[in-house]
Length: 490
Image (cartoon, rainbow, N blue to C red; front, side, top):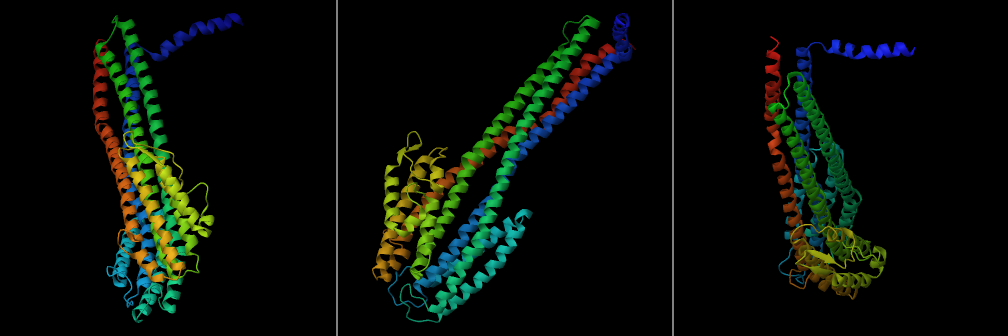
């Protein structure tokens, strides 16, 4: 039995040799293996690099839709705020409201915000995954507008209105409308925003995985191709007494260099992608959400003045808590004791420390959307912008105490004037300053986002044509090494 095994093993090399055939056949098989591996290597370079480039382009394209889903909530809340302010002032006021404001002006802004909602919905509706939510929101929005139209009509035919004292019928219609806005419309807008955010997060994870996978396959195939080139060179050196084939050596060096280059570009693109998504895009979304919720909070002040027995005080502090959460104080406690929120926010703002030279913030004692931004300082000037935004938000919130104090002491006219007035000490003046500070930080992150995407796309632009040139070059180098040897057997 041992003799039989030895005999079989002795015949094995001969069997392999006969299967491989003559030297020309072996050279042809080596050439075919090299060219097949090279073709797969080139194909992976094309697909992997174009996939990475597509991932960068996709997040840029998705940004417009994401902005629309965020802006949708903002425009809807401001529509409701403008209607509330119109009823606060009245179309025929007694003359105790600021001269620079009017119900007609508020309703013009209401119409502008409605047009902005239409534009947002047209863009969002292009996404099939969100189309059903958009249709439902439009149906609810139609009912809301009908109620607002009736409330405004009743107010328009009423003369001699005192501040914050619309006709009972108009107030009842508005309360139905704003309840529908929060129960149906803003709830749908929130679902649209959340579903869109999940799509973006999933796409980011998928693109990152694809980049990692492409890099791994490129390295693996590059190594296989280099090994085959070295094996081919070894065969030629043994068979034809040539130590090194220059063209094969150049091919091996080229493959190694291209593999390293491709992996480096994928790593750089992944870094740009991370900066664009986590550093910039996530901040833009959080800050835009803060802006939208802040508009809702600003509207809650007007709603509360219209109906001080409703839930609007609790709604105001719930919104404020989303924007700037205070860890030692919950929203319900703040609603029951507004002074506790004013003082706690003032303390947290005073504690916050800026180091402008290092672009850092320390002693952060805030959560919510603004707290998230304070913990994601990435770009030049962002720390200063975030610090100023928190300071401006605090200044706006502190004015709220004057509004509620005047109203609760039986002076609604003064409360309305502070709420809607545009003088430096008034609430809307402070709110506008806060929104400008917020938009400045959004702009810093938006600019960084655009730059990171551009860097990623520019870094990959060469791969749209270079792999094809590489394929021709490698094919030529392999041919230069093998074709002269094959001719010797003709």
